[in-house]
Amino acid sequence: MKGDAALRLGDYEIHRAWEGFSSVRQISSGEIMHSRTDPMREARELYVEQSRLAERLRSESLILWDVGLGAAANAMAAIECYEKSSSRQPLRVISFENDLDSLRLALANPQHFPYLRVDAANAIVTDGEWRHRNLRWSLVLGDFLERMNQAPPPDLIFYDMFSTKTSAELWTVGTFRKLSEVCAGRAAELFTYTCSTANRAAFLAAGFFVARGRNAGDKTETTIALTPAELRSPRKQKRELLSRDWLARWERSAAKFPSEIAPNERSAFEKIIRDHEQFRNSPGPERLPSTT
Image 1: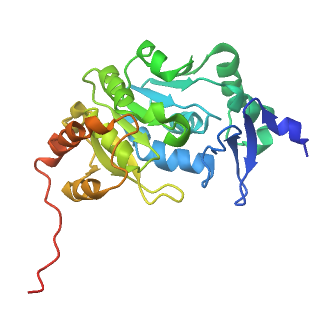
Image 2 (image 1 turned 30 degrees about the vertical axis):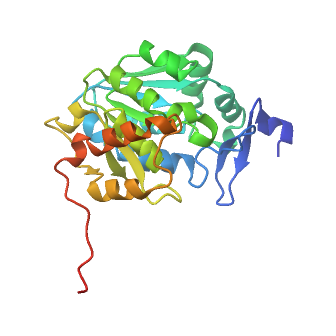
Image 3 (image 1 turned 90 degrees about the horizontal axis):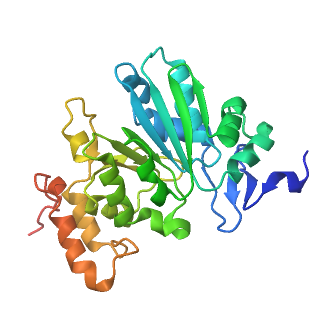
């Protein structure tokens, strides 16, 4: 067994879950990547399967943004999906990360992260790119908010950043509005682990449509955000858009506002959410039958 020093690098350490799998913990915040579910299981179920990546690769080339590379579970799951498919369509995976120490730590301890394609991950760390057949995996290193405009617009986004407790600036209306602008009218879907009321409201205020995603770990559901072009796409997937039932719960919520919304901005923000196109033709909230 390696010593404790080998299980740490910079601000990261290996966390061994009682279920038997390993993941990476950020020491300064205490946040654990893929904390309650095996990293590859979560990557496959929440991101790859929900996005129907294998199905889409049969007929179209794709650009996939992996936002929050971490120890590369989501990128590895996408690459695994591509290699198992018979597709000849090009897939470009673009990973965004501001600190490669979590991936370096995983590479130094491959026995804890058996999903890692060591050759591919090493190439990302050393060269910033890895290619295989029609697959291209590249790295955008630095602040995501500053660097997102330097990548080609995505078809799919796997948004797996640290939570609002650690990285509040990555869950704001402003950030999601920049994401929407980068999509530039493109049909795109974003998948993320959160089901936070405030985060969903931030997506809506930024111009996305928002749907319920499948459960992941201890979360009963996750979130899918769709651009307007994706919602109207002829090949659109069936998604369970948040309805006016959700809107009614949001109205009652004590945590309905994203962190950057000041008290004097709340009325205007509420109007944006209430007037969102998503809720115009949605069924009204269910009402209990009268007892009189």
